[in-house]
Length: 357
Image (cartoon, rainbow, N blue to C red; front, side):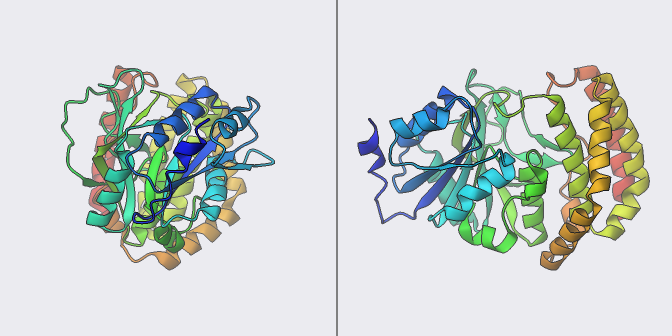
């Protein structure tokens, strides 16, 4: 029914942008997402829909509604990383966007991302994220990295009072909607398949920063997203993957000398994380995360060597931008526990930074 609208993507005066949407049982949210893309002011795009063996047939329904999208059906669930990589490998655009299937994009979202890239230079870019259920609630004004590898969304849960309204450098761009160029990905590589899901955007952007390629927040580009997306939500598996992948990033992205200097602090932090998982009844997930790290040391060492080859920025330069605390949403940790954990993190982070810097 919307094939004619899809045909507008032929404006050769503007660079082609490939929009990769990875789907897994997103239901009608997927159709809503593609419908919102069609209302964009930017015309020259292609949509590549990659499906990770959805059982709800949402990918087939989407193809029926929008016949000109390119549909790729994976034979198994490849996870977020490799699933998106499948789409990125066949993308024809000069620029690419990785976009979650449960998002709704503002009409000017793509124009603003492209404009920011062209004015600020090579990098990885994210929009402002607002809640789909409450458009005045911020979900992210940029992604931040804490010294010990925790990632978090700045301003998540806050009211949008237009505080962060300028394009600015951030620690990493959110994989919910991540804009960059094919040229950048050719330099730094695609998402790391080992991660499967979570910390994938953090790892990609941290890896890019090793090569002097920064991440940016673009407030005039607006994308709406559920408070918690359709992927895992806060499941035990998510907690396991987040902890495993946090340690994977520390072991593959920091210099070994930096890691060993941080080791006493990391052990103390690890004990506190253990008690957090204990409080959630997720000790098994914590132990499984640690066990998977030990089982995959060969993969970790190989990835570390690869990262060292592209690295031309020192850890000191990167660490200067890393934060001492982490904002955890109230629906994950209550304010009292969050306050205690953050006060602890601030102290140990400051001490560790004094040693490293």
